[in-house]
Length: 537
Image (cartoon, rainbow, N blue to C red; front, top):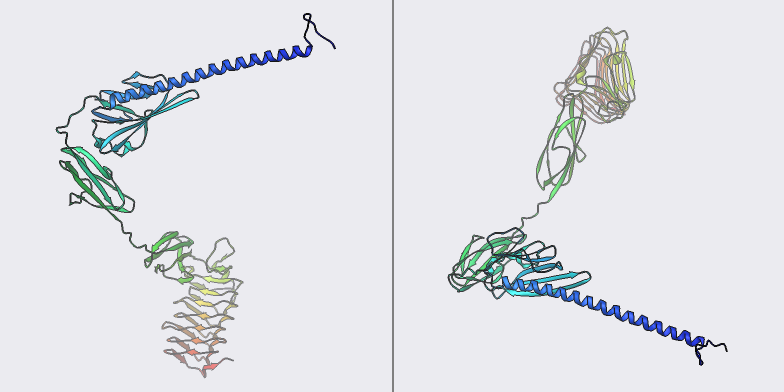
């Protein structure tokens, strides 16, 4: 075996290594014990310092507040007091003198009321690095009246935000006698002072206040069995007093059902109510009005799908409703309704015409031909063409007088829609014939005049639907050879109208697929043949 000899006996290499390891372990343990003891000493010293600072604050609070004559907690700078306790930069100040170092992190306090006496509860919070300490205590305020503390003192406040102001000299009351004020509540609400027992010195004046809860209202105070309707009475504490406040729940009126009226308009005009959604109580009468602006005219109201042509209309709100007012351009020119909505939609396909276009003799369209009243009378004099031929697929509306002085025939034909002559219109064709035909629709000419004169050869009205020429002011007259009125699929109505053939007209014929209404009609016929009432098969 190899040996390392230091003396005669010598150590082996293994023995030497073991010895070195043991020496290292002893050194490590010694240093660990030293640092632990040093750190524990520092922690203990820091904790003791925090406790000492807390006791200093506690001593100041007890010294000045236990027997203080007056006390106020305020965030404002107050004058007229003997001393102030506050916290600045984590240092507790008594009358602006530092009592502690900067380890006071906060002082919090509130007022409790026990057996008619105020008690100041407080927490002193200290901190130094990671070390923290909290001290709690309370002080009976021997000389401060409990009545000076309202409900705002019930919660903790911080000396970071407030200061304690006190007077050292107690204000002695005229008498040491105290009386009890007992406050009770019936219903839902709060009082100031709060419900419970309160104690005041003799002859102290107390203002009673109430705050009803939501949905409740003040009714009265009953103070020592006497009703008081003033919600803020002042009482004098010259005896024990009981005060009970009564709150009553507010009775809500019944909820009235409401409905919506959605109002809108098309075109240019002023409507009442205005465009939008309006809410009304059940049964409310709502007046609708529509006034067109210059250059436009009112057409109709459409209320829940029903047309009303009066611009002023009243609706009863017994359900949700919609009302839409329609205005159209006030036209002073003939035009063609291409899309069939009954409105002149400028720039959307409808055609604006001139009277000269109609005077060319023949005009055909796949829309509806409108000749509004503002166009004025159409006089067909001195035309080079000797006929008038208007044909429209969707109907013809004539709102103007038409007259000629030349000898030519005229026809107005609608392939699908109605032919309508406005009331008061006079269509007079001289010395020739006039044919008015609606292949599938109606002919409406109530209180209008349609005639051929000065030897016009014939006047012919023919429709698949109803022909209505009734009215006291209606004149259907032919001074030529014949006059025929025929409905091939419906009825003819000539009530109260004047139907005449003169100047030797040979034929007067009125026929209908269904009925002929003739009551009150004035029928004049000087010719050789008259047929009224024969059914059309």
